[in-house]
Image 1 (tube, rainbow, N blue to C red):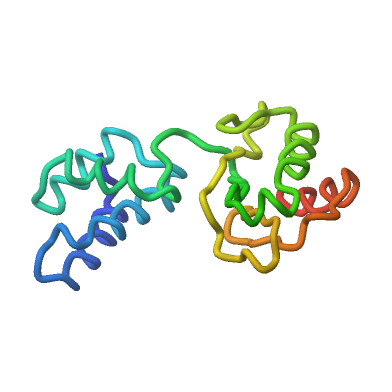
Image 2: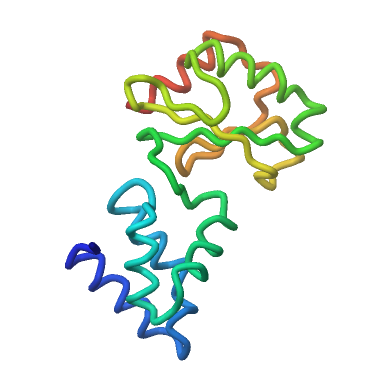
Length: 157
């Protein structure tokens, strides 16, 4: 069930649109901001709040790679796997991340601190390879070493 706060925020977003379903992305972001991810139950609750089907909300939720449909760590690391990043050293960056975190793509560290996910493009091809940690984009990582990466990740508690 949506919390009172989530319901208020979704209602406020819904009021901006002629068609309630148009607020789907914002509603998903609201729930995720409160819970860290969007469960099946939350998808159904959002659908009810927006007078649409659960399938319609799920379709939106699964289309956007920044909506998480399963629990994730406190910090999600999106490693760009575009051609530009790949050519500029993304495989090495990914190996360093795997070694530092002790996890593979799609996994979360045992302490719940980080989840490691691939992403198609971060839109910073001129500064490849790149990764997104939460809302922070880190670019020009072709020369990163294990120590620099550890220092960078230490900022995310």
